[in-house]
Length: 350
Image 1 (cartoon, one colour):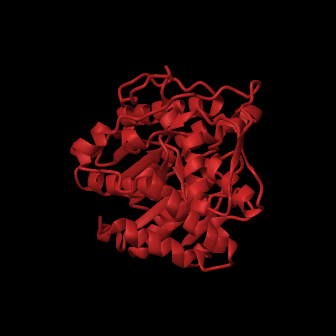
Image 2: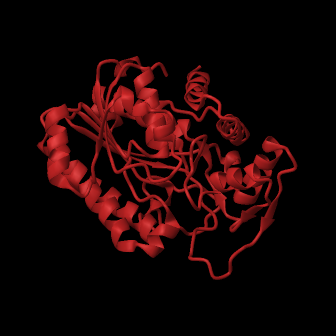
């Protein structure tokens, strides 16, 4: 991937102030795109968005995707050619506590972004980012395929299933006979430097290890398709480019995840983290019997994106953890985290 396609292109990224959104914007900036972001303020403090000062080299608009009127004004003002929709309420546990907000953001937010694209004269390519959790989870040993049933269990997962259905309806109702290409991407669990979210395993590991404390693991036996953040982010951009050029071949629904051997349990992931971190890092199992339901076994079958787009994951799970630890240690030593982001992006693209 060279991403030279994006030089001079106007790309609107929703959710640009988040962890994945900041990596996305940095990648686009490095390749000469005119980046427009639309999002609420960063969801955590500290946060990657502010510490990299990435807003200096883009048009950063603070707004709520539930505000259709504001969103329409942004589309009209900046005339984006490409849209990557990542704004979401992304935490399963949070969705149990605030289900209404979760549905409003993840479902009506998607409706609003697609409606803005429908009324736009500039948009040619749109990628809606959902999740690996959109599928009806049967605790299968094999990966879910794009044609499996969409029926997420918890409010977060289910709201993302609804987001998929909204996208399908808009394609069938409004975009089928237009030049606008619409796709959805169902990515696995992402890890990487700069994630400070609550109730995510690598941020929890970093916080505990930095204090010299034992890492607390709630669900060590859950299997997930963990991958470095650059894997899906680059896949979104590759897809947005390809469908921009050849809609009929590339527009559709895609799983994005690691190779099957890199789908590991959370306990194995924490073991890898402790090995890479060193300094006597260790963890303790506090499996919660009364915890809200989360899938135990979740894998993705990525045969379609490999066949259609010739895409492959580049970093295995150990390399992904190493990169996460390297970034985190530079941050904790007050080093240049933006420079480390650039270094990792260039290493990945090579």
